[in-house]
Image 1 (spheres, rainbow, N blue to C red):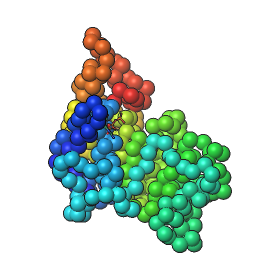
Image 2 (image 1 turned 180 degrees about the horizontal axis):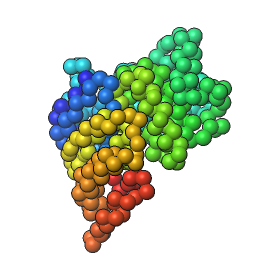
Image 3 (image 1 turned 180 degrees about the vertical axis):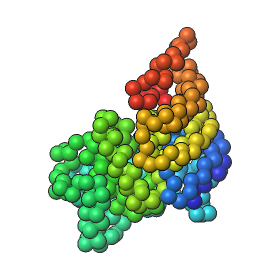
Length: 278
Ligand SMILES: Nc1ncnc2c1ncn2[C@@H]1O[C@H](COP(=O)(O)OP(=O)(O)OP(=O)(O)O)[C@@H](O)[C@H]1O
């Protein structure tokens, strides 16, 4: 069980202090898949970084199995939008890299790397270099590398945002299979409400200025989920509605006066991906 208890975060910058998070409370059960959605700048990445131990909360705390997280650890792995792979290493060596740093013996890490490359269907490309792969394949290498660390928590920060919708859809399928096979706890940040509802057990909607959790939606639809299912569409609509005020609030503070967000722009965006707006 992972518990964020009353977490706040203040960044001190040259332009003064930014209150990025205030009183964030979130509990994630072992093996649960939780998505975080919210307007741009509401602190989604900051929450992931605090859980990862890459940032310290200014107030409150994060507990994992009752123990306070005070720094980074191999039990929590982060996966970013840009896969950050080493171009001079082959695919297999990229997957092995973290294990090598962790001091895992060569034979064991090779076996594990092959196991996870198989899971992301990239065995054939084990000896390829990164520039020879498409964006989707690179992100699958990053996923294999993250899985190979054997962490029990996978923190994913908009991992598929840069991919085209077909590739993203394939990766959704793979991620669901992997999650079902490994039962890792996943916290998944996305701007795409459909993606959140498709994958998660629970969607936490955040508010901005300061960042906090506004509402949580349990997604009880059976898997694999059908995006055209009436209940699916209804849930996406409900979450979008919850977000709309927040997105408007942020947009108003960022745009000129007189700006307004048309309802149609918001609800009818092609794949519920509100891009930079949320
Ligand atoms: N290292 C930092 N130093 C100063 N301010 C920061 C730092 N990191 C984040 N912030 C600020 O904290 C707030 C939350 O940022 P964060 O990146 O967590 O939001 P986000 O919801 O992930 O945004 P987006 O959806 O645009 O990626 C923003 O106002 C941001 O400018």
